[in-house]
Length: 285
Ligand SMILES: Cc1cc2nc3c(=O)[nH]c(=O)nc-3n(C[C@H](O)[C@H](O)[C@H](O)COP(=O)(O)OP(=O)(O)OC[C@H]3O[C@@H](n4cnc5c(N)ncnc54)[C@H](O)[C@@H]3O)c2cc1C
Image (cartoon, rainbow, N blue to C red; front, side, top):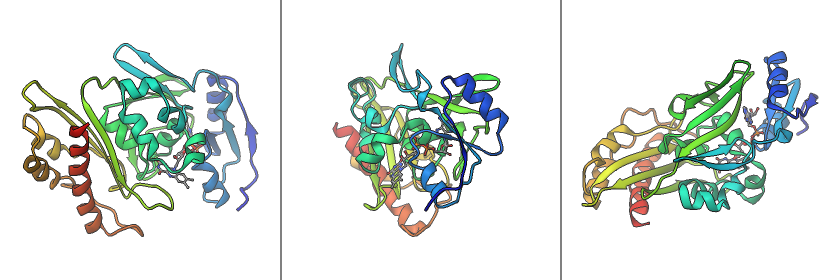
C-alpha cells in the first residue's frame, strides 16, 4: 500500500503548473484532494513519475456570483460546497449533492475539480452538473476554453482533458425559482452511487412543467441526460401518472452496466424508481 516513487512539484501559479504538465505530459498527474489519486497510486494502478500539487495556486478555491452564474474554483472542496450560504440560496442542488458524497474526511479533502477531472462514472458531481447545463473551464498551453459538461465526459475515467490541461473552474446557473433535488442509492461502505439522480424542474404559473433537466450517474460508463424522460415531462402537469410513465423510460437507449453492486436489470429498475422519487422530491420542495 505504498505508492511508487515520484518527483513532487508545487507550483505557485497556473502558468507554472501548465508548463510542468506540458514538459512531462506522459508521466505526470495533477494532485488536488488526493482522495481518488492516492488510493490508485497506493494500489499501483497509477504510477506517475511526477506529481503537480496545485493546492498552492491562488484563486482556485473560491465561489463567486457573476451575473446569472456561479463560478466555482476547481479546488473548492465538497465540504465548502456543502456549507456555502451563497450556493444554498442560488443553486441548492450543489450543497444537497455534496452532503451525499462519502464521509466528512473525504468531503473535507476532495475537490469538485478533482472529481470532475477524474470522470468516475459513479461520481455524484457529473449528475448534478449535467442537470444544470454547467460548463467546465479548462486551462492549458493554448490558454483557456469552456467545455459544455455534456461534451466533457467521454467514458470510464475518460474526458476531453489533455494531459497538459487542468480543470480550473465550473460555471453553473443560478437556479432561481426552479426546483431541484439529488437522490442516490449507494452502498454504505463507499457511498459511490449505484444510481444517482439530479433533477431541475421549472413550473409555469399554471403548474405545467416548462423545464425538465435530469442527470443520471452510476448507471452507464458516464453520466447522461435521459432525453426521452425530459420530453415526456415538458409542458405537462407533473402528477404521479405522468412521472411514473416518464420515469419508465429512464434507461432507454442506455447500456446499463453491471458490477458487484447489482445486475443491469436491478440497476435499470432502481433508476426508474429513483428518477420518479427525485422528481417528486424536487416538486415537494
Ligand atoms: C472511500 C471513498 C469514498 C468516496 N465516495 C464518493 C462518493 O460517494 N461520491 C463521489 O462523487 N466521490 C466519492 N469519492 C471520491 C472523492 O469525491 C474524490 O474527492 C474525488 O473523486 C476526487 O477529487 P480529489 O480532489 O480528491 O482529486 P484527486 O484524487 O487529487 O485527483 C483525481 C484525478 O483527477 C486528476 N485531477 C485532480 N484535479 C485536477 C484538475 N484540477 N485538473 C485536471 N486533473 C485533475 C488527478 O490527476 C487524478 O487523476 C470517494 C473516495 C473515497 C476514497
